[in-house]
Image 1 (cartoon, rainbow, N blue to C red):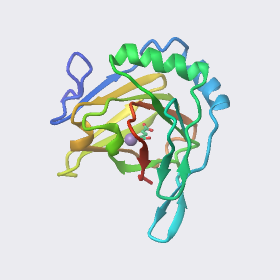
Image 2: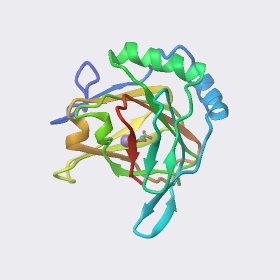
Image 3: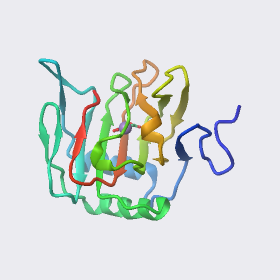
Image 4: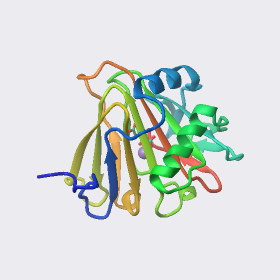
Length: 206
Ligand SMILES: O=C(O)CCC(=O)C(=O)O
Ligand SMILES: [Mn+2]
């Protein structure tokens, strides 16, 4: 069965997910990967699970022009200001998505051992129907989606180098997503998710 209709919209009940394999981001994907690898301040963040503090299995960093701080269970994170390159990408994505973005979470998956567990981007500060614009660069990784109320309904995509995935509407209310560990990938992958954040942010997924 085709996963997409002709507008590259994923055919998922209760979700709006659009995949663009090669959007015009104003910079080539190779160049973007190299510059972001250098320029982003990659940090090791941790989450608290019961009484243990566990490092996330990836490096990450928050950027944005929102002056408040972000909190995880284990630490308070202050976003870095957008660089000119990130500001250019933000504006480009605003045009493509016809939406506003004021913050961005960057993830660096150093190898197939790095991952992000099942979660929804449903922090209250994102509002009820957030638009999440997600750029993938570097190694191709599998992106899984599953229904929150029926985990047997699972869809798998491969996010290609230079691609853009847009999740909007009720997607975060009805579906979870994640990037699983894999032995088949050894290269690095960068993921940027642009969001519109209100009065603060909270990340709790491992
Ligand atoms: O790496 C990805 O494609 C997804 C990252 C993600 O879901 C997140 O940071 O919330
Ligand atoms: Mn997410």
